[in-house]
Image (cartoon, rainbow, N blue to C red; front, side):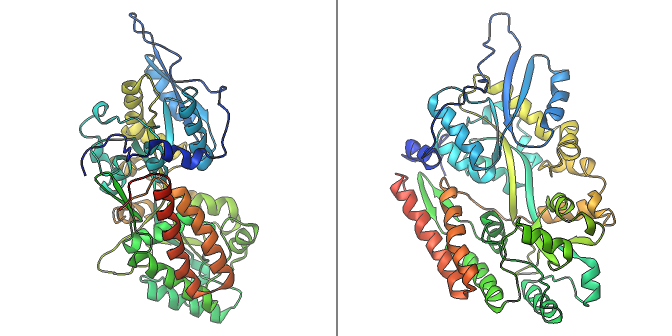
Length: 443
């Protein structure tokens, strides 16, 4: 693909409208990154950083203590769509945008299409890309030679299971998806109240990660045109697999992160969880009494001789297009996400799984407290993370994700295997039509 720094695709205004619809007002309470204009005396630069990562102010304090010439102020934000909408509102208004933004990987195409992020490729050291897995680096380049952020954390997926209940029911840890289905059936037959897992129609990122593992990539870009292939063979395979398990009643169909699901984790009726590297924190918060009873293993595989995983979550630190200090901002985010002291702090203070491969071993030398008995937790996680397949997100990921919750919600409730296949096809049609109607060039 030839260079196209803003990925305009003849639809910048349309791309911004995808998330700005229904949003109004200007966030005048947040300081702009332009509040310290340069002078002949080279006054200190002041940068504003929007982030939702816990305790980021403590991590940034280390930088501020040793870099008086570039001071960074952390402004805590809500994550997800609210953060994106707030940034796009400020960009459209022409004021109120920060210098720096924590941006989820799946939201970067939307922000680039809206001309909200700056290309910092000329401001980074030549070796920066080498700190990260190729699949993660592609998430901030979008297949171009432009760079729209430095990776911060990632969410490689894996399988978590209750070791005590596996032993009680004589279950073996599944290494393939066929084995997962067999274990699910054996467990549910032994105790109809227990399930190996659940299909969650509320979590499109979870399903996207499982599809990624199977080899799917829902969007692609060729020159200045987007393609949508949500209904490709890998995604249909994943949907058909889970539709069969749900229809047979051997897997639960309750959404995750509900009171019922939390209770199931606590009382042992949810015996496993297909999740990501950040799962220990969720388990500790939702099922504290089960500490020491869980273990982690790779996801079951479609092709054991070609181990693979997907990602559920992860974000980069980006420089916004309205920052008046992109060089200084790039210098800070390079430090934040590649220096040993900052990467260690991100892991130990903010509790995230850093994308920086050289710093992972030092930052994560001990297993999570909730998995204290699994000494190889992080070394195993690092090996799993290396198998993550590429996955391209598009500028209307919010539309696809909304279609997922609508269509799979109905299919899971009805326990219809055919409904799962139909849900994928509906996601494809809805996402493709939205791209066209928004004015993007579409193949």
